[in-house]
Image 1 (cartoon, rainbow, N blue to C red):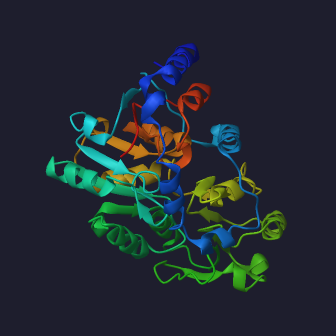
Image 2 (image 1 turned 30 degrees about the vertical axis):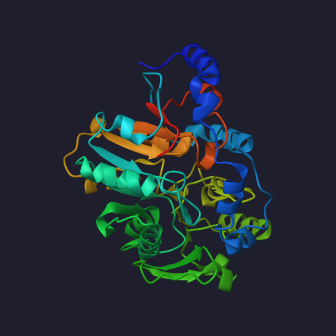
Image 3 (image 1 turned 60 degrees about the vertical axis):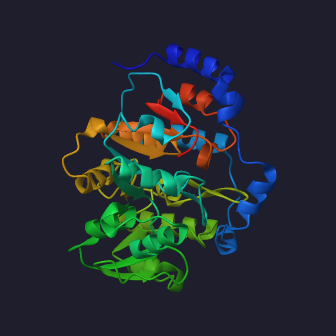
Length: 349
C-alpha cells in the first residue's frame, strides 16, 4: 500500500499549524547560530567558491528531477512527531545515524547528540554511523567524532569511501581521483592519482573516482564530460549527495556533477556508492548483526537520501528537522510534494 498524495497533503496542512511548527522547529537563537558558524571551515568555503550557492527549493527540484535514478519505495503511514530520538527507543533496537545534521554541524557537535548516543547505549541499542563523506579516509572521520566527544569504534562507522574502495579492489589500471587538494589515497586498493595535479589523466586514466567536489570548477566539469564522450570509461562516485550545507548556503557535491556526466543509459554509467543506494544500507546492517530491518531506524536530515534510501532498504526512518537541510524550516510541504514520508519527524537528535 502507498499513501495517497491527498492524504499526505492534508497532513502537511495540519502539520504546518501544529505545535511542532509553533515551537518544535525553532532554530537556535541568532547569536548562537552566528557563533556556531565560526566553527565551519573557511578552507571548505574557499574550495567550493567556483559554483554559486543553491537553496533548499533548488535542491528539492534537482532531487525530484532525478527520482527515476534513485531507489523506489512505498510509504504506508503518516509520520509520528516527537521532540527527540529518546521518544522512539521503544520502537527500534538499532539506529543508523547520518553524521551531518544528526551528530554535528561542521566542527560542532549538535547540542545533546553526544548524550543521546550514550543513552542509546545505556538502553541496549546498537549504533552505526553511515556517512557519505568521502574526501578523506575513515580514520579522519573517526578522529573528528572523537574530538567532538563521541565514542564510536571503527566497526561503528561506515563511510561511502570504504564502499567505493571495495568496488575498486582488483580492478587494476590507473584511476584519476576528483577530491580535495592534497588528499591521500593510501587507503584505496588501486593505483590512484589526483586529477587536479595532471590534466593529462583526462585522456589516459582507465577510470575516474569522484570523492569530493572541493576545488571543482565548471571548466573541469566540462573537460571531464568531453573526455568521457570521446572515450567512455568507468566512473565510481563515492559521494552521491547533490548538496551539502555550508555556512553561507548549500554547496554542490559529487552526486550533482556525476548525474550530469554522459553514459547514464549505457554499460559504463556512473556507479554510485553511498546513500540512498542499497549497498550502503547493507553495509550498515552487516555491522548490526541479526537485528531485523523493521527494528532498525535510519536517522538523517534529508528526504531523498536518508528517508528514501532507508525505506527502500526496509528500515524505519527518522527525519531530524531542526538541523541540516531543513534547519529553520518546516519539512511538511516538501514531504507532501515528494511523497517521501518518514516514519518519525524528530525536532532534534
